[in-house]
Amino acid sequence: MDSKKVRIAVLISGNGSNLQALIDAAARNDYPARIVLVISDKVDAYGLKRAENAKIPAFTIERNNYSTREEFDAAINAKLSEYNVEIICLAGFMRILSAWFVNKWSGKILNIHPSLLPDFKGAHAVRDALVAGVKESGCTVHLVTEELDSGKIIGQERVPVFLDDTEEVLHKRIHEKEHILYPLALKILINN
Ligand code: GRF
Image (tube, rainbow, N blue to C red; front, top):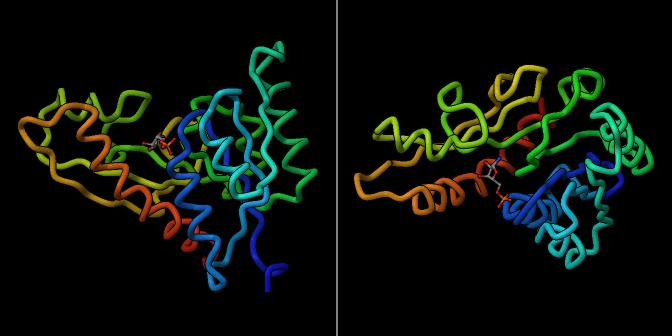
């Protein structure tokens, strides 16, 4: 059964609560994927601990050990090959991948973003939604393409935005939906 499961790598930079949601989903026998590798660009990312707890091989690949983005991406790619990875899930990975990498993995990289794309692309999506005064926000899982936060949308979840929301409170509400959406969207990608 396990050998039929699609082999997933999750790339992180921080807490890794979405990584945890994927690990938990993949623990179910009927889930079509298995997390075989975690890569962080930050040595102190808490997600590395989550990987360790789940006995998933995890590695830190730091950007400043490479002189170009392509060399950094090639190092990531080498690890992915070593573990026969089939699909990559970006989960709070705070690096922009090179065109070379994205095209090589075309249709096989998912990202989760804390807004209802195409609204509020970029690194401050939750803050930007609050500043814009929207009444509703949410999260999006989409395919990664060369253009930031712009690939095909696989799934979205919505949350209300309240007048007294802080960035932290709203992000927490969005995170709760992300943890449901990401495993679902990965399953949709695999089944289609
Ligand atoms: C999530 O809100 C995700 O949408 C964004 O980064 C955050 C990562 O959170 N890309 P976590 O590390 O998975 O807890």
